Amino acid sequence: MGPDDYYASIGLTASNFAPINTAFCWGQTMAISQNNALFALLGTTYGGDGRSTYMLPDLRGAVPVGAGTASNGETYVQGATEPLALASFSNGQPEKATAVPTQLVNSGAAGLALNYAITLAGIWPPRP
Image 1 (spheres, rainbow, N blue to C red):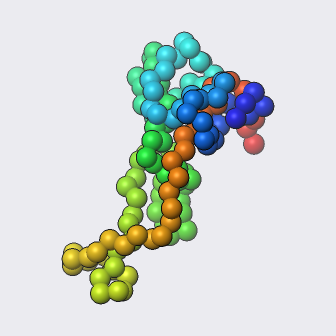
Image 2: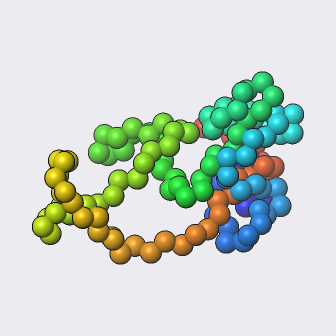
Image 3: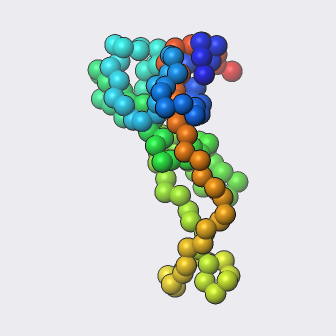
């Protein structure tokens, strides 16, 4: 993340401060007059009134998912938030979509808390 990155690029940082020319993705409200270029890319996808304000994405406690249609047919719209699916098991077998009592099982994947930051100044992304 730096001046050689594209505007609105999002990356991870292990620091407890947003690097220069970035801001944490914490859903902050931004004044359009502060950064017209970033507003031109984000619009009101993540909130704001579109006249004087827009919002940055809020990735606190969230997992980014690519926008579009997944191989399982699920569609993910840019800016929408979706609950994460948890794996559940009943009697040692994977649970089907039913209403029977289940036990949630830790998948064994470890989590590491990092901060997402969005580039506020950089290179204008070219269109394909």
